[in-house]
Image (cartoon, rainbow, N blue to C red):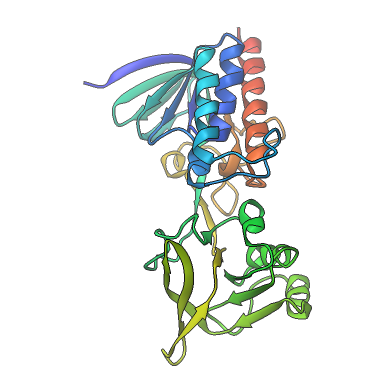
Amino acid sequence: MTKTLDFDVLIIGGGATGLSAALYASRAMLKTAVVEKLAPGGQIMLTDVIENYPGFPDGVTGPELARLYEDQSVKYGAEILYDTITSIDVTGSSKTVVGSDYEFNAKSVIIASGGDHNKLGVPGEDTFSGKGVSYCATCDGNFFRNVPVAVVGGGDSALQESLYLTQMTESVTIIHRRDQLRASRILQQRALNNPKIDFRWNSAVVEAHGNGEMEYLDLKDTRTGELSKLTIPGLFIFIGFHPNTQFISKSGIEFDGGGHIITNMAMETNIPGIFAGGDVRSNSHRQLGTAVGDGITAALSAFHYLEDSI
């Protein structure tokens, strides 16, 4: 039998956004719960060392920072519950959130379910994630200072991150499965004119190899099928990002063309009492610091919403 629980603020997702929201909501004396399907921490759990987060001049590991987030929110009364959310009914003043094990009645809901980078799906990709394979140049670029790296992708994100990586790496090889880029013309021009960027056209990564750390890639010519080897210690993959919003696809919450939740600056959605922040929302910078800010803003907005609803 499904157990029903009642909360003032229910937060879906236990990453940086969700745990920051939990801290502020619980400190405001609101009955608060975070629902997470895996371990709290979200994307930062996949990061060995975080060097661009204020307050940690020597860096901090992702799991350690996640533990600190969790401990601090629990200290003020937030509950951490483990469940997979399957649907949400936003029609009433009290929102009904349905999970595999629980059903929640919540006066307000903060959606902080994050998202996932699209993967290549090739052997070695998961093995060397954090050990040469990355999905965030801003997070990990400095680990490859003065060494060559490769970037997979042909859109705006791939070229923007490639241009950023030229500031610290020896060189950037862009691997693209076609002979034309999809990025905006101005980004194409900048990349094509940058002396530190070269291109492997009509090429796809087949497998990543290494001993502990990634050392080289097998590439395949998409026209001829011919295989080649690229010796490279760093691979950055930018082939898209998908938000985790499947469970609210029929809720009436508004999305942008990429499936991200549309919010205003207060993290309010089009549904009163429903807030969203972090990677799941439209126009997110997908950075740890901004994710924390989104969570804090959403919690403060939820507090004011509940205050006005009394």
